[in-house]
Length: 161
Image (cartoon, rainbow, N blue to C red; front, side, top):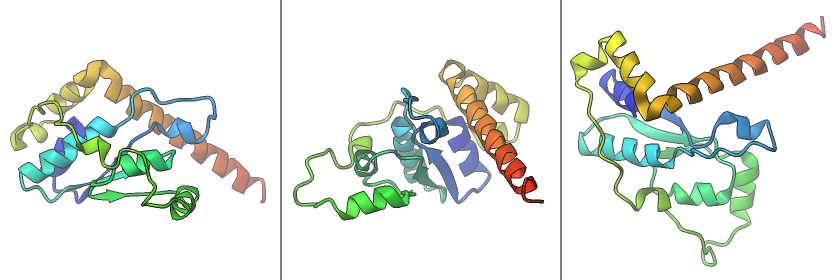
């Protein structure tokens, strides 16, 4: 949530909220035990109740169940295979829990005032402590994975020259 709050204070239009760690898309044995549904819920409600222009753009989904759980989120990115699966699934016979991510009240969110949002040291400390360091670890893992994929892509391109 500290990133979501900061995004609204600096005027971002969207936050790209990854429901699953990126690793789920590259490692078939990896299961994200700490999915981002609660953050999607809390961020969207935070923006709505405070009249913020920032909106949630959920991404990194692995099943149509996850897509349907996010029914009600401002925006969503759905991969082509999941779009195809959704197109083959009848809405009339859907038995899953549509909008489940938004049916419970989120935990109380500690607001960060605009002045604190501009104090980078204070914000970094808040972010580092968020969820006992798990938020910072998730970000580190995502940056590392993006870096690995970039290195692999650069090596592939270089192999053609």
